[in-house]
Image 1 (tube, one colour):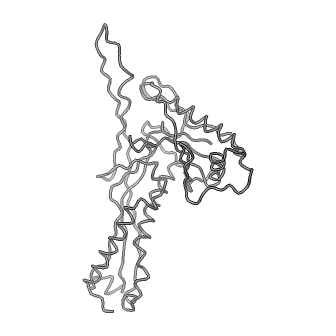
Image 2 (cartoon, helix red, strand yellow):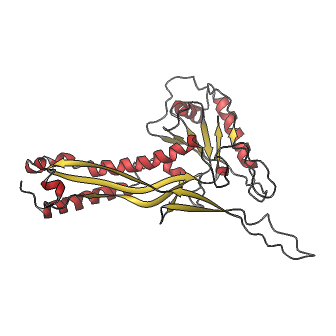
Image 3 (cartoon, rainbow, N blue to C red):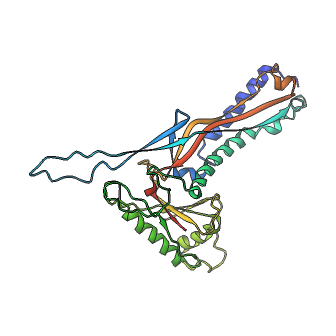
Length: 312
């Protein structure tokens, strides 16, 4: 076939529509993105604001006047990174009408970018960088605000999950710790953790414990369904393939409605597709290729450390 600039431009428009449609689909979005609050970004380094508690509670002013209480301001900086990928199609493939073999590539790359952002969030668990209070996300020395009460979100696991009882013991320990966490004005927050994140090796064990309420090793064959998450009552259990320590796992609090998440996703420039549109271009004339690239700018960082606990 004879390829013109108009044809290349129309083909790119079609590819871009495929990419955009797949990118915007909720299907195939990495489940780990559910742990991060999306923050639209407009600069290279995004300053994410966090506001402390506004009050310790209503005051008795029967014989006095109100004492005004302001929330303390905290910030965390996330540097947006630039990510790119791409593929090439030989000019001869167009001439021989074989370029259609690449018709599914735009949708494939859109799913790859969605998975990539999920992996960035998944990496944050073990990287354990600094949260907005200047302390590691998971630590046993966190003290905020007026009372300096320590909120320990780095807990000791039982060390073995051969029985459902051991799983329940640690889940209760995580809930007990989170319920006692205090904000920066010393008021107990009463958080009930609702999301469990486990490595690949513990996924089936937690499924068997939470879904069957039985000894994990009996009966055999109780494997978790395909995919990277399942719902067990009020808990969502998520497999994080980025976790390398087989014994470490996490509990977090996620509330989409109130915007409470343990992590933050800074979205500077959504991934999009670009490509060759002219037969007068260098790549078409000299390299004898049509080149298609995918470009995005984003990163992820730590949200509120009091919405997460780690068992190690």
